[in-house]
Length: 204
Length: 204
DNA sequence: GCCGTCGTATGACATCTGTCATCCGGCACA
DNA sequence: TGTGCCGGATGACAGATGTCATACGACGGC
Image (cartoon, rainbow over all chains, first blue to last red; front, side):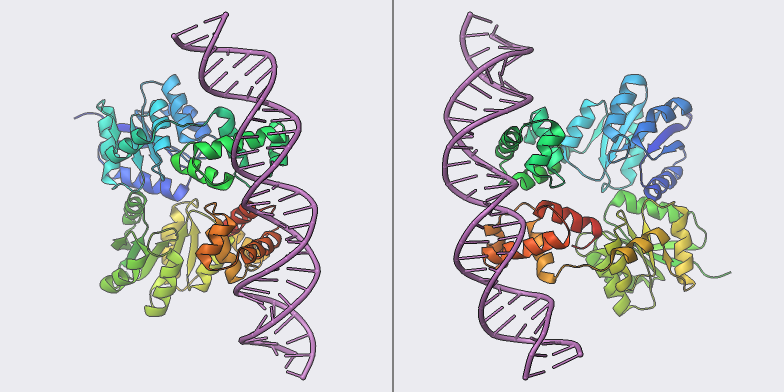
């Protein structure tokens, strides 16, 4: 029989993280050797523990699971990457795959899929929800330019044009232009809806 | 030794739910006898399984954990209620307690607190994070009227005044008045920020 | 070398949003 | 019985927002 699979678990909510660890602890062939709560300590922990698989939540302080995945993929290419998230946003799937993820799971999938995914990626397979994959492909790529995304992100908290202009070192007119084109690209009625749509698709 | 504590687990994300079940399964004196993924089936499940404690996530389809708590409290007052949530919004704590909750936990508290809280509520204690309790008291009550809340909630998706007026059977001017007073009460700069602030405080 | 796109900017315009004063009817509390 | 507050409404006004045409330099592809 093969040696146990060493897993790194990155998830910011302690209760969920430890619960997932308990879940994986029930599997004979899997051992959680490290747990972290922030995206920016993932690499160090992976180095310190010589892990086989990293299980990464996307929503984390410090760095997102996707950013952590990109870093791990570059620095420790032997480590397999399973990205786990609450939101099945097609844009997330796309960027996770671009960052080198081997599996992409949503948290409302059955728990059994987690251990299964870990074994599969270790065997060289890729694990993706087919529905989500179809959605990601159907939706097309992010139509927003870098600047448009930046302005939308800054506008999320309800800042006015003047504040956005000051924060981004742009003229007010330019801010309005970017927001206007973003609103049109997203078929929104105003900036608030544009933000919502972009968030939903994982384009921010 | 006392008989095992029968727990009902209500949480919409399967992976998290089953992971929490695995976590609680490690405790000798606790048994998860029922799992549900929607708020509106909690009562029926509690009736069917004669549970001692209900563990309720707030964010669920069908009905929120808080609504489910109120219903359980009214119909099966013997069942102890532990409310669990991602967001430590003081307004959530307030309404959970008003709905008869015995404990209020946030998901980024250490996992050990979960089993501990279950035992404590069964012993008649109440379990609340002191920091959160202080925040809830310091913040005061929800300053918004019913209508203001309703309009804010409807405005969340980026609807225009005209659409809000149509949806709520109000005149456009009235919609603007409500939004204006809400914006002032929340010390926001515009509706978007007002929505954000109200959400953060758990006032929507 | 030309064309398209991006980033940046301006000015003009129409519309939307936020504020304020004011009004009415109903209802609760003193 | 009067004094408020809430729900609902109107009208007027200032300022914010969204749209459009237009412009220029940089850069990439053909």
